[in-house]
Image (cartoon, rainbow, N blue to C red):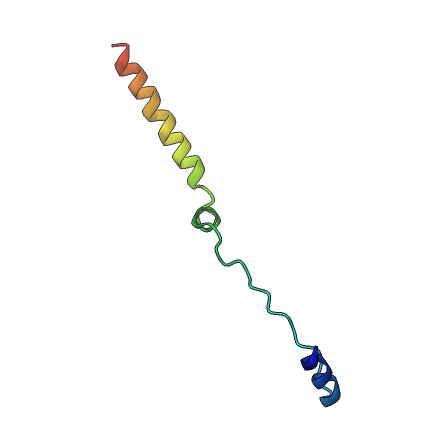
Length: 59
């Protein structure tokens, strides 16, 4: 605790603790924030592909 006493004697404020921000946000979150309509387009296209595949299966 020598540094704390030295800083107090010099009239300096206590040292701030370095808090590392989590910048490792998922790329998925960034894409969804940029294109909020993407899940709807993906879902509708997947649904149409499945319907077309089902119709072709029962021909």
